[in-house]
Structure formats: structure tokens, C-alpha cells
Length: 391
Image (tube, rainbow, N blue to C red):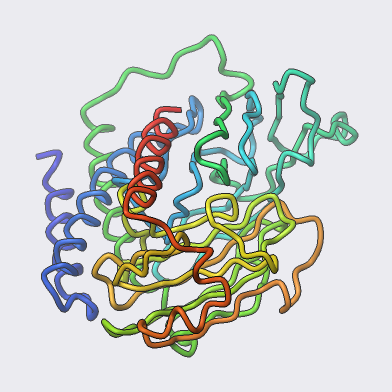
């Protein structure tokens, strides 16, 4: 049977989920099974997107197929490549806060991350006045050495990853993007064969198990060895974009605790904070305020953004909901930077008794929101996410 190996892989992945050391409650297990379902969808999708001669951009993660502490503010696209072929990417720049491109030499595995061969944002190439652009990725070509829109793939190039990042979910609009191999436009791929499609099921199964193992191991590399209820100073994101910094941590809060995270409102075009579950994926950012960008947050008069991470509702605009997760991950990202960040740009973290928030927040009364205002904030998230995901 063509699907036999994939069925075995699904069963193996479920066993890994059920044996995860952090899966202690019914909520943990339920979310683990949700994570498994999204990973099954994504693995099948990516196995059938593996078309290096007739590539297309596939959504690599979304609200229902999450991985790798996905950023709630980002649309992720990827296409597969050969390092000896030339590819044409055409598009139209939207009004989002950031648009970036990254060439990787492989995929993530349980023991290593792929190397980033090149990474840049849209400031690195020419865009026409109407927002249209054409980029070319290919082998080193002396005839194109002065072309600002030609990018050398590098040996081993295997994937092009594109990120489109929103800061204001309500007003910003995504752009358009497509890709083709330069010498294949106008031709068609070979017809499918049963053998090739069976192989795709086998590949999807391997991708599924590797995906589950990898991103259960990933937090051990970058998060869980840090002191709990702290966040790092801003630092360049490992393996990421040269114009992106991040601050990371993990939390463990009791029912009567609140974490106050104080960070300056940055001059970077994008600054975003999020919570993640122990499955190393974003929490429900559609129906709950589990993330905040600088545009969504309400800054205080002193230029600081003070966010309150708690299970209980403090009645404040910058409440970040734990949604039943007493443990999880913390991350701030700054993108499209034009300067290096310093410790002064980073967060201060303090865990306080929930009842003491009015005394510990210098602008507590200014931050208060009514139940109706909070419902309006959630409604705006739901509407803007639905619109964005159709973009």
C-alpha cells in the first residue's frame, strides 16, 4: 500500500507526542494531538510541494499547522530550489512592516539547524514605484554581478523562505509573490506515476517524525537552560535574518502570579511579543490576546510598553493571556533594524503577586479597559486574521 509507511509514521509521531515529558494534563495532550494533526497536514502539503523544477510558494505554517514557535504576525512561504538553476521571483510589495528572503541549505533536523546561505529584506533590491519587483536567484554569474536584484544561491541551496510581517493587523495589507524556474516557464512537468506518488507518502512520513522530534528538542537548545521567568538581552536571532534581533525566555507562573514585562517602544518598524506552549508553537492568537505588536500595545507616557502575562484577567489593555498554560515560552522580535540593539533596548521581567498589580504598574489606571473594549480587541484580531490568511 502506498500509504503504509505514512500510517506507521503517524503512529510513531503520536507515540512521541504522548510520551513528551511536559504532557501532564488533558490540555497538554489535547494540544499535542492538535499539533500532530497540523503536522500531518503540513507534512503532506510540503511533500507534494517538493517541485524544484516547477516550484511554487507553499504556506509552511499557519493557525492550523504550527511549528517552531511560529510568529503570529508573520506569513511564511517557502519554495524548493536546485543550486545549479536560476529562479525568477516576481511580486508586488504590500504595506506590511517587513518583507524578507532567506536561502537555506536544507531543513531542520533533531540534531541541527540548516545554514543560512543568504538573508536580506526588501531594502536590498530595487522596487518599482508601483510596488512591483523581480528578483533572480541562481549560480554565480559574472554578467549579473552589478545587478542589485540578482542573488547568488550558494552551494547546497535547497529552500527559499519568505516572511511577510505585520505590525498593524488592521490596516496593513499583504503583497503578492510567485516563483518559477527561469528555463521552465511555458513547459509542464512530467505526468505523475504511482511510484512517484508512493514515494511522496514515504517522504511525508519521514518529514512528520523529524518535524515532531526536531521541535521538541529545539527548546532545549535555546530556551530551557535559561533561568526561569527571565528573558535574555536582545541578540541577533540564531540562524535568522541579519536585521532581526530577539529576546527569549520561558515562564512558570502560579495562579496568583503575574509577570510584568517592561520594554521600550522601539524605533524598529517591527517589534512583537508572543507566548508559546511547551509544544513550541504559538498559543491561540486568533481568539485570545496571546501576542502583541508595538502597534497593538498601548504604550505608557514614559515610552515604555508594560505587558502583563497572567492567567487571570487584570482588566488591562496589555494583558497577554496564558489561556490555561502555567508554563511556556516568551519571545520578543525586532525586525528591519537599522542599528544594533543594546541591553537598554531589551525587556525587564518581574513576577509579582496578581493583587499587587495596581501598585506595581505606574500607569495602571491609564491601561484599564472595559469588558466591551476587550471584546472589541478580540473581534479585531479575529477579523484581521481571517482577512490576512486569505491574502
